[in-house]
Image 1: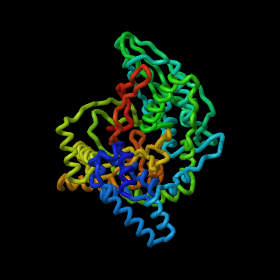
Image 2: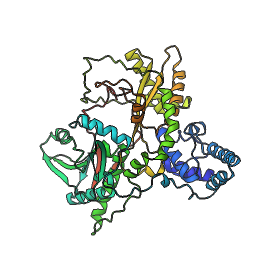
Image 3: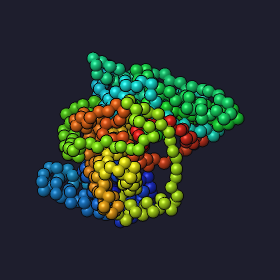
Image 4: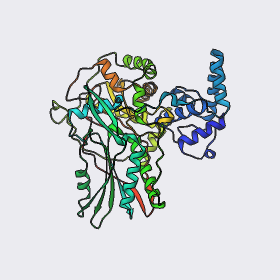
Length: 487
């Protein structure tokens, strides 16, 4: 069992399984809250048992988890001989027994399909302001070397054929939003030459609103600066993709391009077994609703008292209708400061996410004078191993509510942050949109529902892609829009 857990740890952390021992902590090896969720998914698929997220923090080593799994298996056998036998078989034999695909049955072919909860929220926002770009997901890659334009278009069309999300459009049918999957869509790579020094301005001008009724909701362009670098631009609407989707698409796009340069015949598309529409349809079924009933009660208890409105000191009156105009401030922490933060996290069995979230709450308290504060945070929403490679909008937003007592030590506050965060992550599948609909807070067109500030902790590393004849590196695109008062 320890040997199998070592393989799971190594797979999730993307490290050599010979590089660590059974007594080393998952978090000391580079794990964090998001990877802990992936660890749960992998263990559920390979070992056949779903355990609470909190147990990863209580038992962060292979050895302690192995003992915990054995206790769970023995306990379940005592409760149910049939379940216990299956759990034990899953623990000690190569697992083929736990097929999560039963949760996502392939949807029969239809003219249109329902939207997921996350898609519904974005569609409503789009209807309110069709011309906004706040929910565009632009990315830019700087090209070092020569690139084949026709190879790019071939790769783009193969990518679109692989993923139904890239062939999806949105309409209203009998007053209800729906998504349509198109069988085939031809896509092209736009080409522009720009004057020296105009590259950044050209990138900003290229990012423009999408019409959700007209697919594809993905654009690609090749920009070449006179006597300067060339950029490959990708822009996709959030309603069909999230940050993990963007990383998946970029990697697959590079792979498809490489194939287009090395074989004479066109790449044979391998159709994905699970597509986003299957997930959206599953969300409207009885299985999903049964899972959500318990989580719903936890969130309703959390927001049983009136929700506080965060009063930040503003330079000017808050507009009556929300504006998405914004700006970005970049700064870095020194290696010494980073070490101190990691040491603080390690001393109190916290993740860096929890430490920084606590600091953010303290900052907001100092700015507003309020002690009861709600901070939104996005979670990947892929709490199933079979969703990890699906392109779509899975992100859910958790409204993390914490009350600060100015008289208590900061360590005590961080402890309460840890407890409330882990509980929220245990109930992270419950859609934010459903919570808003259920508790029905007082709506203000100048504010977001439940919270006005966001804390987003990204753990994805910057990457470069080596292609035949070229290397692609990430290029910073300045974001001039903001969905919240402060992100």
